[in-house]
Image 1: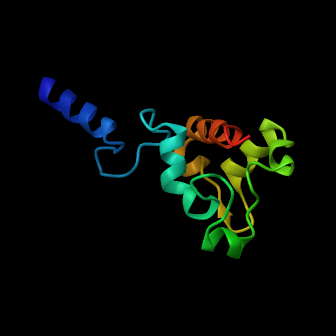
Image 2: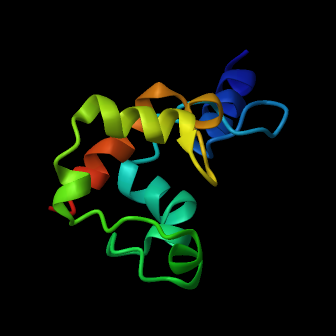
Image 3: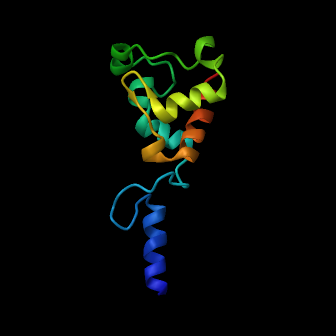
Length: 109
């Protein structure tokens, strides 16, 4: 019993379920860490969108008043459900991680 519990805790710490898939809303991942792996490829590490993919998809600069002027609900909706070529992340990452990503976007003020 203890060994099984340790295995489950170890998988959760690795962000995996017992079948190897990502744990929805993996609590251990911070918004900044998830941003680096899921968002920075297009939006850039600095949130400017100054990447080849960002330029191709014409992503907005997170520092801009257009983005920062949106409500939390508007930005969270885009993160959760996607927009244009950007996929939604609520189904794969969970609502809590999407909220952490919102805070990451807000940090680019």
